[in-house]
Amino acid sequence: MDIDITSTAYVYMLNHAKAVIEWRIRTQWSVRPEEAGQVVPTMDLWVGRHELLYSRIFNS
Image (cartoon, one colour):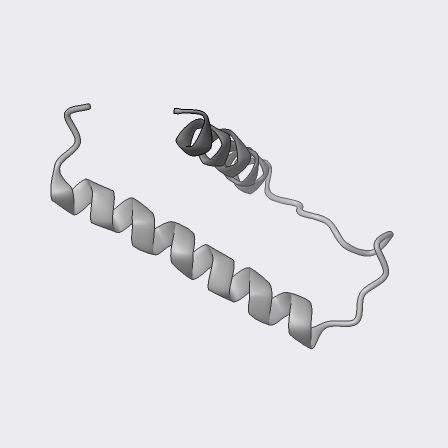
């Protein structure tokens, strides 16, 4: 894979920041599942992509 170190570090930090923010939101809010949701289609695609990348790491 021809990925430079700057891009790799950026993606790693972006995903880590996303995980930290999501953790903080989950611990702060008391929201019923019916009220939870995402209204940004692009964000839905990005979050769904995480599971694919995660499974690729451990299948290799």
